[in-house]
Image (tube, rainbow, N blue to C red; front, side, top):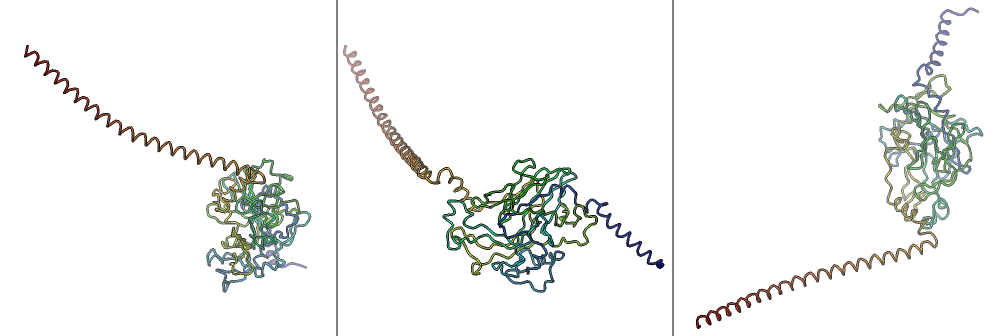
Length: 443
């Protein structure tokens, strides 16, 4: 059967277009993620007892509604990853609020469990953002998304602070610091395609390590990341990890997760702050959808902190810790532009953190167990010595002032006596001279 010439032209044109699109990413390096970004990408060990797994970003958005000041925003279109930044028209206080009550633990909040190979199916819970510093240096940020963050409970507070944290909720094992939505990340700095160091985000802080640091374990040159149970904070080693002076994150080799196996890839222009959706390694063509809008969203990825009047909210006495906190901001707020591995601006500790840090510094050596009595005795002896020394010094100063005043008085009296003596001696001498003159005249 003969084909119409016009149809032949259409088919040929279509094939050329497909071929051109397939080769576009290979021809333009800026539209393709370099292979080394995934060759050295982190592998995440999720805690064996963590119920909150990596979550599909779009599914999370679809199970929330935007609110401002606790009220729904009217006339908002159906939101997805390609239009989420329309909410920026209402300012940066918009919160993606869960449609369901988080305390009922709806199914979507638990995310997707990776398979034995570490892959998450039917979900995209990771974002890779490339920041080129110059022709040789590149920072690759690996962002991990979870729909729920579970904070610590009383079993994760170090002594002696665990004896101070009280209240019926704390004693029943209630977790505090929970929030809907959770963004965590690692950053690997590359120089000419070779990794130089890695940064681990940990709650409000984090820590950077050189690539050769023995604390950073690897498999086939891919660094392991140990995710804290519930909190998803990232650490280079398993076990009990201390954060915020006196809280514990539990990490172990539960379930392996390969984030870059299902991720969105982007380039970030440091000059214009613009994002470009690029093809991942191994992909032959650039993405068909832009999907940068959700990264530009400058609001919160979870509910606002509930007021005390809300029955879901509980407060820990003394410290003011709350069961529910406000959800996090997005990836573009995580200091993408930095000089070193760690953010340039250091966070200022609150007075509660500072006080807890001082207590925890003294506690192991001077306050724990019998040591507190020895320390108290030494402190009393030292304080007594200081008081006695001050009293002795004050008494010496007073005596010195008293002697000084007495010395000045005696000096004036002596001076008067000396003047009187001089006058008397002068009179005597004058009388003696007169007497001598008289005797001479008489003779």
